[in-house]
Length: 253
Image (cartoon, rainbow, N blue to C red; front, side, top):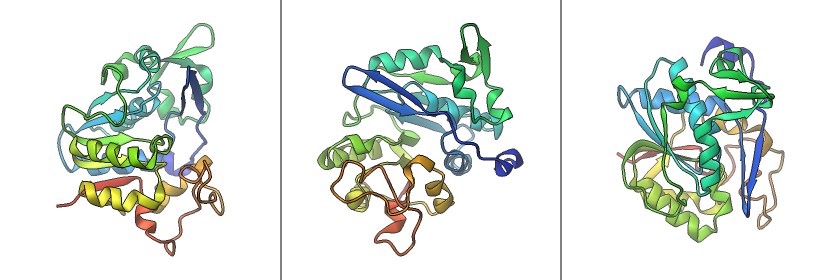
């Protein structure tokens, strides 16, 4: 991780968007250890690794991924989608309130241009690197394969049965890594083992505790709406801790 990021880990500004019954909560550079770890893993796989972001909301996650890749001097090919077409249109424009810059490191702010009216826009150099696909849901199969497939902080909105189907479909499209968070924890091991994936232990504790707003002492009570969202601090004595506290899974060799 760059020295600048080691020295400071400011909290990201959260963006919350709504369209009919759809909602999205997202942020730029939300978990820097996670992005850095995945990119370092992908760097070993290909000169230009490919990635797909499902449930990308208004684009903060794929744009953050590409920006950090460029800061690491790694070229990546990125595609993304969301279930809500209106969110995708916002992502394509790449225009956000200036508040998104709050909590960013100077090297991260570089990727934004100031606009009038209290707005900022992703630089064209970055916007061109993310290809947004037509809207689709997590339980629809993807038509291509990628080195890594992402579904961040979204599986919690599915039923347990839908999660199983989503992971199977996402896994079919992933050649190497499947990156997911905020899932139904009691079944993540069985879902991932069925799909042929296993947890990546690299920086697992640092990534887990960097979710910030999701990590609380004691977690949430089983059976409550927050059970798959609120998680306790990293604890190696918890059952299946390496699966429950994981964000990066790899295809079994």
